[in-house]
Picture (cartoon, helix red, strand yellow):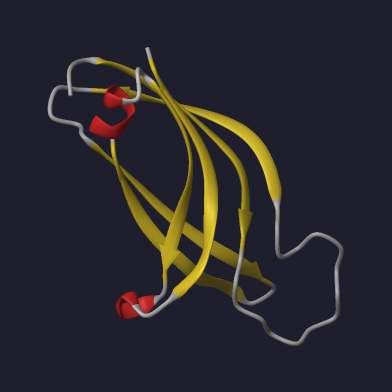
Length: 104
């Protein structure tokens, strides 16, 4: 990857696991639409994603994933994709996060 900038829009997420708690509207499929810009240096070719569930007493890991930034280049500089969040040890999935990645 060459020097430049990567704009990441975290659109929304879906969590596939269930726990029985008091139902609070829209907590299992949050929508953010927040933008973040990362300055890229030569050799930066992977975006690491970690998703947590924020609890009253700490936070629980929902899952993590990696996005190869070469996919963004191959898609013409813009990639709109749902990224799966594998469960621990790669067993199943804890959901997915919708990202829009743009190179500039």
